[in-house]
Length: 306
Image (tube, rainbow, N blue to C red; front, side, top):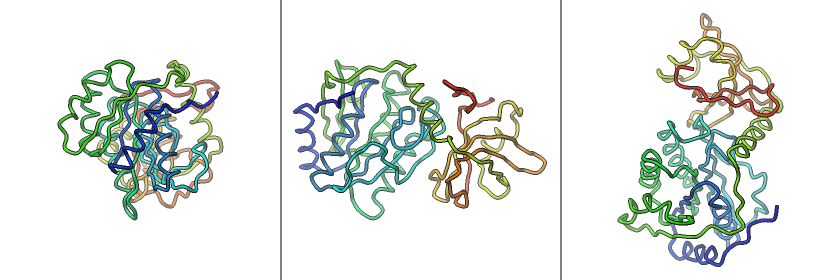
C-alpha cells in the first residue's frame, strides 16, 4: 500500500509546533488517519533536528510495543524509518481497549511522558486510541489531557465527531487546538482486520517461548490481583495475560499463565526466550487470555471473575 501523502495543513501544523513548543496529543475516531499523522509529525520534527518522544497510546493497534501496552521511543535526526521501531519503555495496560482500563491508560501515558523528560526535553507526540464516543470515552480523554497538559491538541475529524471532547479543552490555558480533515487516502479497516493485526502481533511476540517459574512471595502483587489470581479456577487462569514489570513498574515482559501451585505459591508462565527476567519485581494481571495453539484468533477477553 502506498503511504498516505501529507496534506499541506500537516506541514503547517509542524511549523506551528516548532513555533510554540510543547506536548502534542493527536485524537481521532477509528480510520481517521491519526496514527499516520502522528508519525508524520514525528518524522518532520526529527528531520528538522528536534529530539522527539513518540508515545504510542493505542493499546489495541499498537505499533511500538505488543498489544495491551503503551510504548515510548526517543527519536532524533539519525533514525531512518518508523517501521520496526523498538520502544525505549513500555507500560502494561492489560487490555486491547481502554474500556474498563481508563486508570491504567492515563497513568501509563503520564508515566511515559515523564520518563521521556528524565535527561532531556524532547517534544512529546502522543498518539491515542479511537475511543471517542460515549461518556466514558469523554471522561477518559478529559483526564488524559489534564495529566499530559498538552500545548497542542490535534483533532482529526471528518465532521464534528470530536467537538464534545474539544469543548472541554477550549478553556485550557496555553493549549492550542488544531482541527484537521483526514487524508482522503486513509483506508478503513474492519473490526476483523484489527483483530487479525493484534493476533499477528501476539504470535510474533510469543514466537519463541520458555517456561518461567515465579515465586509469588518474592514479587509484588497488589491485593486485588492476589485475590483474582488465587480465587480463579484453574481453567480460568490458563493463558491469562500477565504484565511482568520492573522496579519502576514498566514492562519487562508479557507472560501467559500455564499453572498455579497455590500451596507452594509458585506461578508458571510462558515468556519470550530473550527476556532478562532478573528485572521482574511485580506482576499485573491482564483481562484477556491467549491460546497460542489457535491459528487465526486465540485472543479471548475475560471479566474480573474469569
